[in-house]
Image (tube, rainbow, N blue to C red; front, side, top):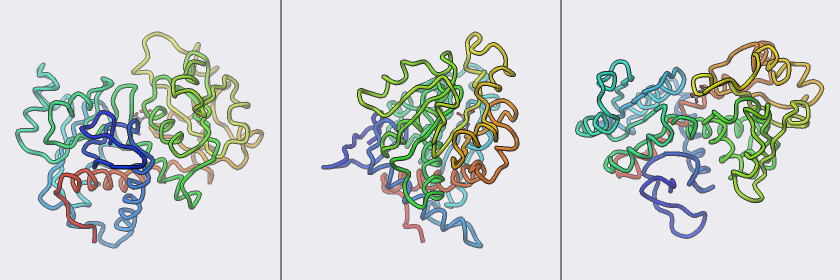
Length: 333
Ligand code: NCD
């Protein structure tokens, strides 16, 4: 199902169950829709007085966040707990990785404790895919790998948009603005939007949004690069702002942040003149006053807190689907 998982998918014909969630790449439209439908079931659980079901009782989830994280780590932990699984968190500084142990040795050690799912965030692109090859008995979820993918972020963004539009987003204009080249969120979002049939516009300076990106999603893919903000967001239904990923930059990509903000920051004026009906998304963390003004971030057009809420439901769905596919989950009741 997932290209790098132990299964493969097609949109029609036989479909092997998803065993890992490594990226949006390799997911079929059917997989994506099923995960979102499952997340909607979870939203219903999260609206109950007692937001907990016994679905994954006796199952265990290890969250190995070997790079900083607030939203993703907390929501994976809450997601596991809402489904009654046992959740354990490890970070790079508090683990033997800080003593020089390799990722594979750490992973073998964790696997020996027989977790059902290992959620991995790692600075190296491909780290979760590497682990999936060596740990076949554990479902691996990619919690963000380098500049590569962040599949649960894209899924929670699709759920947020589905809730906003009251239907799966399709035929919409999506503008992704900012540091696209270093963003795993952008990459997973682009793939998800292309699967759903949306038009994707990538907007930013040539250093952060190179023209070649238009070709990197295949011939005929509806991906277009814009270096002028007004043109790129004109008439957009959705604008996603991205943080400057300084920790992944080698060298200087913009002359200075003030100038960047003047040219590419999303402000009320930019919206009023070019995309008055657009909704605003941001994966967080926000750098207010750089890629987005406080006024826009806190406006009624902003879906930023909805995205955070959707994150728990989507991660519950991912845990549920992967464990169920390995024969280890009860029905959600
Ligand atoms: C993103 C990430 O870590 O890739 N954050 C997140 O998971 N919500 C985006 C970012 O760090 O800018």
